[in-house]
Image 1 (cartoon, rainbow, N blue to C red):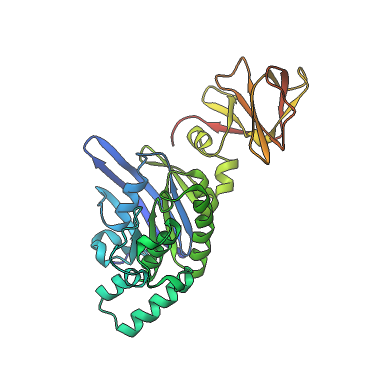
Image 2: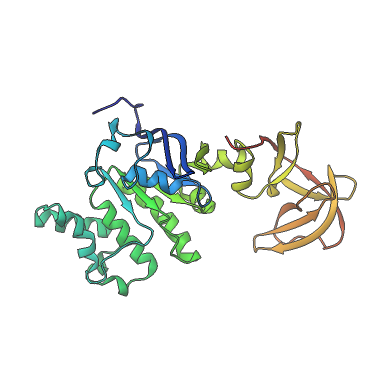
Length: 331
């Protein structure tokens, strides 16, 4: 049965809830995802993001609520009938099959003509840059190449929606950074809506057009990476996204958030706050200075370009150029 949805919206989740015993994995979750959007579900372990992904894929069924794809009720369809593909964290490649055969597997299961299968596999291997490795086995590939095979296998079926569950977690840091750019490029090139689940905020911020931050089964905020970083909806988002200094606000239920890069060290007595340099860390292009302030439970962090002149044990003042008032508690 077809139900109306907002024009330009591909996926709509309406008041979806799911419990496992006494644990409420999803608590009235509502969100919309646009056509050709790269959307991230971000949050700590146990926040509900994987349950939501599996509900969209059809491997879980919400206790209540609705999930619509292009206005059509997804919950009425079994997983294999949904125009959705899920790329698993483990990649789940067949070790005895070649790269080309792994990619072709789903198309052959659908009994498509051999010529069409050959053409589509060749096209998608070219898209992911593996055309010269079509005859290799997964064991002969690097981690990044295996990830590309799994991605090729997922997009060759041309789903309207591709779900990715922690797709880069098995890769080392350098390859992960490369694949983040690659995933974004591929998403634009193939014109498929991507929904990625991750607990890595850096990964979500670097790839996604918009991010839904979840905690305790509830959506805390849905916004662009910049909006999340600069204007968090509550203390959870402020603390979870990036590094923040949280100070007393206008009321007991509010805090003032200052990002480390917005703060500066000045002569003692000239700043809004004063403290003692506790530690300095040089990270190449920037330095982080931790300042112990007697009125704060945690050190105040300042990010400076290049190498810092601050010396451990010296007294400094603290000023900042930008701050945001954020409310307390979960939404």
